[in-house]
Image 1 (cartoon, rainbow, N blue to C red):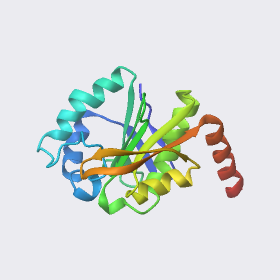
Image 2 (cartoon, rainbow, N blue to C red):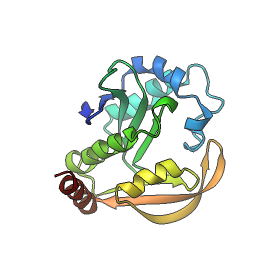
Image 3 (cartoon, rainbow, N blue to C red):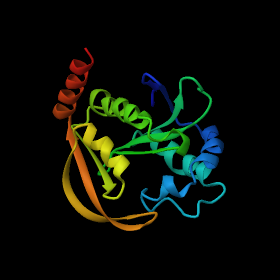
Image 4 (cartoon, rainbow, N blue to C red):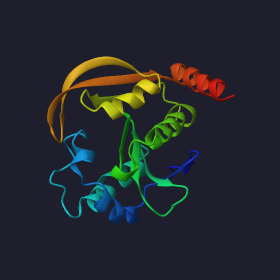
Length: 186
């Protein structure tokens, strides 16, 4: 069961099928999808959010293989502004944010709380995330979190094939990062 998580500004609510209608309006923007894995169809079909949630995301969550959340501002808890997920396997975290809410540090907050969940609740030893080198905003989040690049390879994204980096952090490194955050805020 995926729990509700919170940050100072966000509610991360477990994905529900009824979220698809809001996501279908917000998500299909080139600026959002271009650096996502090429399994995201483009142009985005009119019922794709519903199909993906019903046929992929929710069944994977029920099997305990994935954890999906919608992002909502605490000031507007009924409005979806983005999404974040964790996945067992090779690529462990993915996210997207609606255009009006980008560049406000909200995704960094969401990444911190789901990474805590990955290590502290799910007890996985390592978190790995691939990123297109051109995706500077996403790379900045990994840098800020103390992750390191462990591999370079070309990968296929919605916008094409690009040089990519695989970023990694282990549980011990993550806990040291979180302690340093707490010390800085004290």
